[in-house]
Length: 165
Length: 107
Image (cartoon, rainbow over all chains, first blue to last red):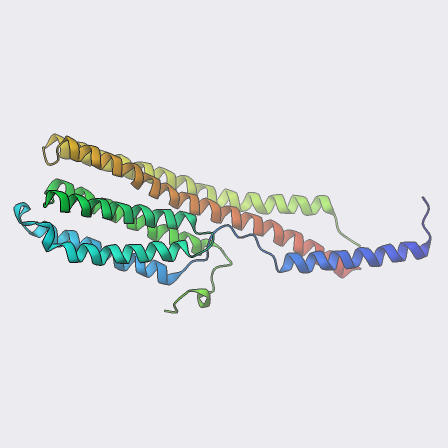
């Protein structure tokens, strides 16, 4: 079909506006698959890790027969509160499924070990040492999962973090 | 209007390939490290059982917990993979946006 010069001009103008809309649309649009990095969450992970490690350090200092649950119940509750807070903090962030699952794993294991300690009213050296190392690995995982979000070029703006350092 | 779609698509593919090429080794390293750490942990559990530091019940509990720990370590690799995919997609979109803007300037 042969188009006139008027129709060609009209098509070019129409085409121009469509491309302007596309360019403007793509200019403000980015693919997002993971949550933004949050320095407050990262710092919280480090802080709780220190508390857990201190817990095990204090426990292992006592003779195995002197580790009744009652001596540690307050610390268990305190740390469980921190871990639950970390879990909720992660769950509240969109596109943060992996960090949420990691914090849930840590929370569940902490509760498991607390319940076992309470039931047996003791915590043998062998189990305590292995559990302590496990928590170290888990907190490293939590910290690395958070730090990995910093690799996105779009997430270099620290003003977006929940707490400014 | 100068907008070569084939050239633009090639540019987008190159942008994606560039990001994937640089990020894949890190993801691979992440997975290998997770497995190495797991191997180390299982060896420690075995040694603890053999030396009598833990009993059979304790060993079973430790092994159950290692499943969850490995899952946590591999979740880190999943985050890294997602960030790589995100960066690759956005690199491709930037190529497209630049090509469209360049084409608009010619009109």
